[in-house]
Amino acid sequence: MTRSLHIILLVTVLTPAAGRAADWPLFRGDASQSGVAASGLPDDLVPRWTFKAGDSVEGAAAVADGVVYVASMDQHLYALDLATGKEKWKYRARPFKAPPSYRSGLVYVGDEEGRFHCVDAATGKSRWTFEAGAEIPSGANFAGDSVLFGSADEHLYCLSPEGKLKWKFRLTGGPVMGSPAVVGDRVLVSGCDSTLHVLDAGTGKELAAVQLGGQTAAAPAVSGTQVYLPTMTNHVLAIDWKKAEVLWDYAAPRRQQPFYASAAVTDDLVIAGSRDKLVHAINRRTGNPAWTFATRNRVDSSPVVVGRRVVVGSLDGNLYVLDLAKGTELKKLKLDGGVAASPAVGGDCLLIGTTKGTVYCFGAGK
Image (cartoon, rainbow, N blue to C red; front, side):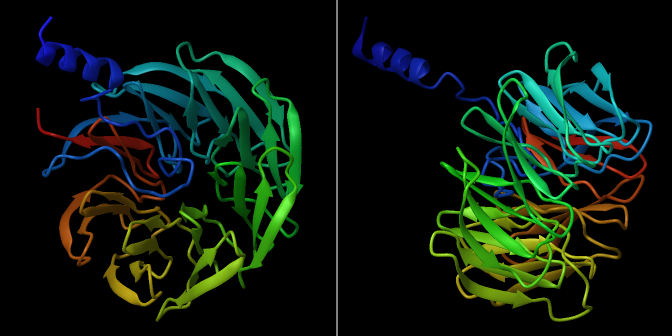
């Protein structure tokens, strides 16, 4: 064997996934809830297929191993072939608003009647269910072998791989709507108690707490020791979660409307959509405004950053592609209904659902 051939074979062994586009297994793409895609997208996005569910799709899709998992208010969790949009299976429960999550051949999602489901990704059969005390708007995240999600019964739940309760943490005051973020052995979660909580992932013990000045529906977005949280009181906060200190506090300049969407975080910017109909980009270092982009309706869709572009939906029925640095519109894709769901990016495709129940897949032209 020649030296050059030996090197090629070694690289192949060490990087078996090389050339395969990254997946999108969680609500914001990764455990830190960053909203930044590891996968790329073609320069010109065109519709590849659509799938029609029986009711609104309000949560982000999960993408793994060439399959799209999407939950609908029509009481079904669907598995769709990423290449064709053809249905592989559907699992019936109760209406779903929460986004599904994928890990190791299993799909996790909570429904509007408070039941959390673990479903076999290959067959669509139930593995187990867990009863929470109220509806589950939060997506699932994972810490080690534990499964974490928030419920409207004011609790963050931590379950074993078998669906047994390991611990739960109460956030007094209302539902835990945002998905928790996980950084190593720490869990970051907030809710209607207007507080960011830093918890030990193994025990659920609170290690630190930071007052936010407003309730949150968003997932914390983490980068290093900093976490970014939009609030329902028209603010976005940057917090050093290790020191439990607020670094800056950005107040949206007009139309006192809440942020429901989660932020996306790059090296330079924090980007979040608001019910003031604007997408806000904030200088990550200073907390000063970088740019805003106006849509025609509320922006409850959480922006996703793909390379030098931002993709975000609006309840005006459009999916917007914006220049990351300038906030200028690069493309506007008209959909069949309002967009409350957040984009998912996987397999070089972009997936988004609408309030009309249509799931769109955009990618390269065929």
